Picture 1 (cartoon, rainbow, N blue to C red):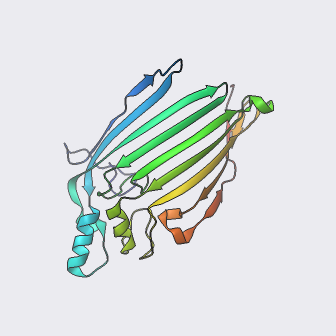
Picture 2: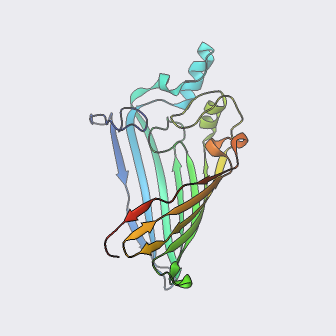
Picture 3: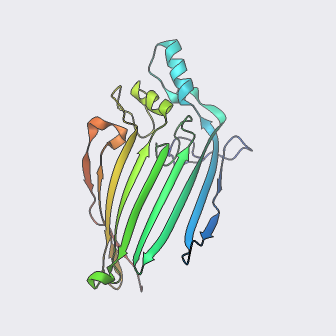
Length: 223
C-alpha cells in the first residue's frame, strides 16, 4: 500500500497492518453452445486510512469541516468485489460488462474515488470496413458513491481526487466512451478516445462535459 493516497512510495508491509490482498479466479461458463469468460475479483486493503463517518462525527464535535485524514488509524480495513464478463456474439463482434462495489465507508486510497461501478459495451473489428486490424468500441460506465461518502463531500470534505466545497453531489456519474484503434501500417497503432461525462466528479453542476484526447501512437514490430 502507498504511504499517501495514490502515491508512488510504498509502505513496508507490517503483518496485517499495511497489506493488500487480491483474489481473482477465472471461470468459463458454458450456456448453450457458447463459452463465456467470467472473472471474479475480491480484495482487501489494510493501511493507515480513515473513515467518512468518523470524519463527520469529529467535525460535529469540533464545529469544523470534515477531514478524513484526521481520523486515520493503522490497519484500517477497506474491501470490495468485482465481476467481469466478456462474450463474442459473432466474428469480430463482442460485448463486455463489469460490476464493482466496495464498502464505501473507508477513505478512498488508491486508483479512483468511487464506491459503485457498472459498465457495459460493445467492440467491433475492422474487417467490415476492410481494415481487419482496426477495433472500434463504445461503452457506458455508471459510477457512484455510498451515502456516507456523498454526505462527507457535500459538507465540504475533500477526497484525494474529488471535492469542491458544499455543493450538491449526485449519486452517480454516467460516462460514455467511444474508442477507435486504427492501425495505419504494419507496426503503428494509435487510439482516438472520446468521452462525455454527465456529472464530472459526481457534481451535477459541473457537467456535462466532452473529453477528447489526442491520439497517442504506439510502434510495434509485427502483428
